[in-house]
Image (cartoon, rainbow, N blue to C red; front, top):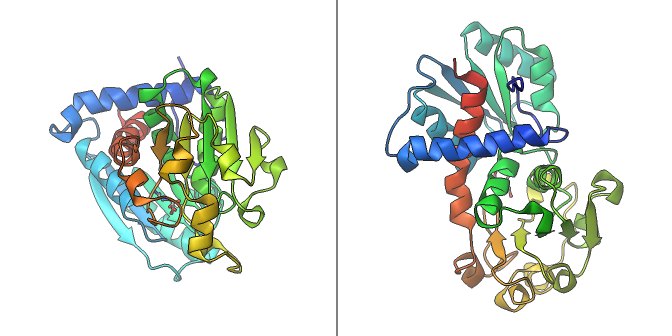
Length: 308
Ligand code: NCD
């Protein structure tokens, strides 16, 4: 019997059995709540706090829906962008919230490592879930991406995945790489202009490309990423039309991928910048399925941590 998770701040070094258990449990959740039409009572009496220091639409809503579908009470504590970068203020917030007896805190913060700092400073039995910290990790997105792929292509040992775009600033890319490599993916290709690529030593499980036409050849999954301008120190980018020509996913490029290649994107999409509208809305797109799976994955994570 594996010990259950107390916190979820990253997928790095999470054992394969644990990732698989969470993915299996996501499917159990989906079926038990009949795709969201039936409420479960696994977390009755629990209180969950959404603590988002960065703007978010889908992730915050998805966590809220997941918690409500499990019968928990949810508090949304929205803090505007710039108000809290100081550790002291943050821990004061944490201790205030702990004094109100929250069971879990879901945190998004622009500073990488913030969720782990909360884990270190938490005094009570509160669980911490990372909903995205800086460019470092977005573990529930990694899980929902793995689930979406697994539903169509269950054998990861045969899988070639390409992740293209602003990989350097992407916490999604990092959590995807951690999930897919732990699940045994055959090849993970990272592609983008040199200025938007991480150091190769940071992600040794991957192969690096600057030519998207080559990187997408034979790929079973193509994940495109937004230019995360808010995380760039200085914005030194080609104009959007030039970027799209070099790194945009259009039907011509998609034709070079393996037959039935899944098209994915964590959102928000910039149509005509990293992905063509007809590809985003096309038959190979799994983008809305990712959003739907996000709720089931978050139900699984919350239930794993908090169900009595
Ligand atoms: C991502 C994020 O916030 O890291 N969005 C999300 O959670 N679905 C990706 C992005 O902002 O581009």
